[in-house]
Image (cartoon, rainbow, N blue to C red; front, top):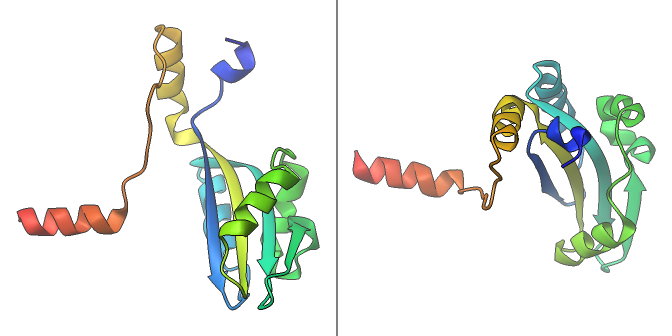
Length: 142
């Protein structure tokens, strides 16, 4: 294990799809707030669009006019999202949509991740439960 990876929190990615190619950059404020609070660190961002005919365009975040404040993050992000990743993502998009692919470090979990690694442990499984399903289960059990 290298010292560099010992100082990383868990890394997640998300693909956020916007119908009708209506990506207007409003998500930027929420991401900026999370970064300012030290909750996450953006590692990479990319945008993919698919028109009604199914033609795909891959865009760098700095080339997206609607990205607004997200453009300021480009000097801090690494270029780890490959063209292959973006082509794979485009395959799952519906026609006439835009998607933002974000890769981020969960800084809030950095201390726990370090404690796990330094004590000889390792994360062997991870996942995310849909909030809607958990809310329904909690409501049903009340």
